[in-house]
Image 1 (cartoon, rainbow over the protein chains, first blue to last red):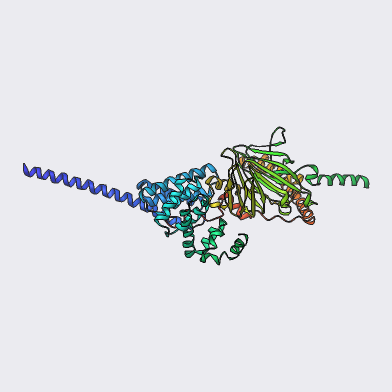
Image 2 (tube, rainbow over the protein chains, first blue to last red):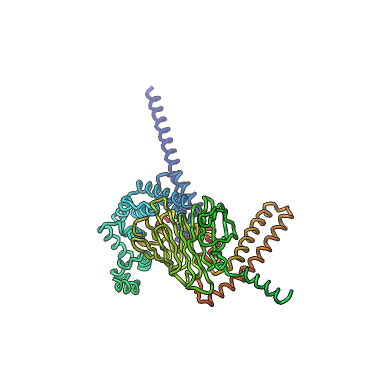
Length: 230
Length: 320
């Protein structure tokens, strides 16, 4: 009787272990499939670089990321990738309503990604940028910008986005945030002076650039002109 | 026919080629799609079609599916998106007198792209665009204006090529190539920034207008160019009908006839436009710069995929 009881307990334990293993195997398979889809999309996106993507390629990459999210719905890097693809689609859209809908969707994907990975500085900057695209120049935008600056002012891509956001929102920013933006300009100039100069020039902010050594040479003529008019 | 008779016939022919301004024509409708109406002053609106001519004081209204591209005698171009309204307040063009020519156009609502002709390139002070509380003084060639009176009276100007000075009662702001600036009624304009940071709806309107196929921005003889535009529209319709019924010989014949008529009308219009351009240049007009997205490759790619003019933002580093 006792032996039989032990036997059935062992049987139950082994069934439970098998179920657990099967569940783990299924989960691993799901994550593997999600990862495969995401990697495929990522390779495709890297192939485009900063060039505008063909709409078919864009749709295909979006489909891969969406498939990836079906198997791993909370994967922050897939959510970020989907948001980035939606911003690319927004840039190429010709229908204003569609463009706003894409920006709105990108915003919610960046938000979901930040729930999973709240320390991603680049994603905070993207969230702020998406608010700008939605024409919502509010406190939430400024606080996303602040978070980005706190978490990773030197992270790849962050200084450039911070520069764009800072210069676009300059009149709305307080003195601390302005100081941070000027710091990001200096940092960006040390890393890639030409890009930093191009961003400053696109807003006509020679007043900020002429005080930064790394930019003074590039902005020489404009700085002279600026000092004369000043 | 004796010499006097021949002289009379030639005089009538010359009159037919007289500049449109003398006959009161400011320009013609180059291309229309969907529902577009044109209205002269407070008169009754009529449906606009390719080849219609218009005079100063005319307004164009596009419905939710309407788009229109118009060309003025001096080569100036305007393209309107759906749900837009444009008014030609004043337009005088004298091919022999640059100082005596002027153009005042207002965007009442919606989105429009403007490309300057010889008035804008020669007599900048006499070339005015208005959108709500904005007055735009163009210092270049190609600009997109958006006026949204329903949304706090927001107005936006984006420069595709050249530069612009946006003037309001509160102040002014300079906008260069690839930049945009916005303002709301009663406020100072925002500082100019790159188009890549413009609101999503603004970027989409700019893309949509960039994809519009526009003719070259040099002077024309309105009557002959209008005839060519009408003939080309007719040929497109006939060709589409023939393609829809490939076995119908009558439709194919009609399409071929329409195409050759359009080609003949276009040849005549091109010849006369070249003469009009030469007249303008000899009179002291400056050649207008070619608008943005104007090369055949750019136009073709723009139609398939409008490209933003500045690198994508938000896609730097991982994962984009």
